[in-house]
Amino acid sequence: MNLPHSDVRKLPPFLGRAKGNGQAESVETPKGRRGALADSVFAGQSGRQDRDYERGYSINVKQVALAFAVEFFIIGLILTGQYLIAEEAAQEKVFSILLFPIGLAVVELARVPLAIAVRTQNLWSVKLFAALGVTAAVTVTSFSLSTIAYQTFDPRLAVVNEKGNILHDLKNQKSILTDEIGQAALGVEQKRKDRDTIRTQYNDLESQIGKLKAATGETCTMFTDSEGIEKKSCRPTSSVSPGQLRTLQNQLAITKKQLDDSEAALSIAEANRARFDSRPIDEKIAKAETEYRIAVDRSQLHSYTSMILRKAPTEVTDAEVKGLESYLIFIPSIAAALASTLLAITAVRRIPRRPGIVTTIPDEAAAYLFGPLMEAIKKQAGDAVAAAITQKTQFEAQEKAASA
Image (cartoon, rainbow, N blue to C red; front, side, top):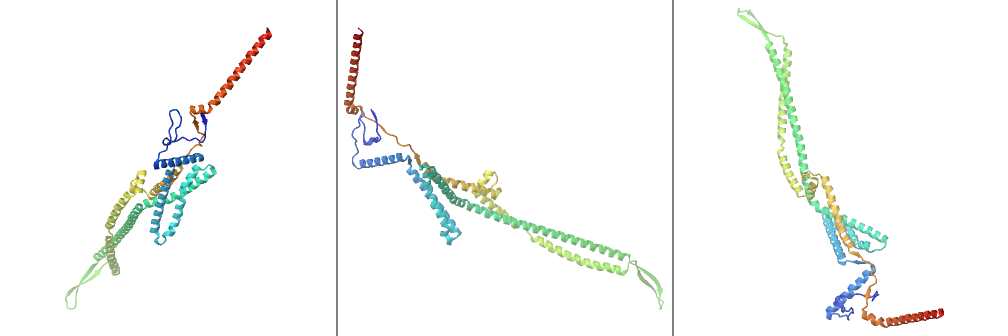
């Protein structure tokens, strides 16, 4: 016989056993300390189960403890990283710099309880506010973790930037030196042209003076002096005036001086041009390029960017590296911030309200309890049926007698 009963609980195997006919034997509890411990454990489990059934959910305590452990570990990392940054930035103001990170760390402790509240609260308004709190805490944690993530990539990226700046400066110096060499070469070429022009003028003047001298002649006449000696008298005859020849000779002297000056200027320009030597800076540039290439090969960001964009590591730009760095910093930071939140949310398991428990009473007990009642009911039913049959028989006999 099955009867509903709400207070009957199933006993665990070590607290009792049932007979083969369905009757429960008396509970046999283990003796000694183990028995007392088993009783207390069972009582605690039963109490927690009753509480979970009453409130409609259960919480995995180990999972919540793990969520808090992750939370405290993240907070420790954040505070340690912020302390190192503050110590490097300003050793005298470390505490004042750490005030803001400490405040953010305190806010992060609220994320696990808020995440649990999202699953356990019944009112949607409370769920909404708890979800907003979780979002705010995740944002705070993501910001703090992004600072640590930046410090992960920053040292090697700083080395790459330093080597790149050195290489850039050397190339700028090489460019300046190249311009100076070009200017010096142009100066030498111009001095040489000026010297050649003056030399041409000088040669022209010499040629003109030579032609004038060649055109100059003498006219001679014979005469006898007072002593009777015959002599010859010569005088120059030329179509060139003496002033014209003097002018050309003066111009030749001036041009000679100009030619000497231009020769000296050309020598100075050639010496100045020889002073420029690009081999030392070329060697520095080659060394800087090697160091820069080594630094780029050791940089994780440059390697990732080159793999994604399919470029050589030395060909990726700073903008491309920074773009990838933003993804590598913020996405893992958000994921790490969500880890403890997801642990807390999934630690809550909704369970339905406990229905009434149906128990079975053994047949012997039912017969013992309800046997006399059933016998009385059967006797009263039998008597009622017999009386009805007798009354019917009498009624039919009376009808037959009346009809006869």
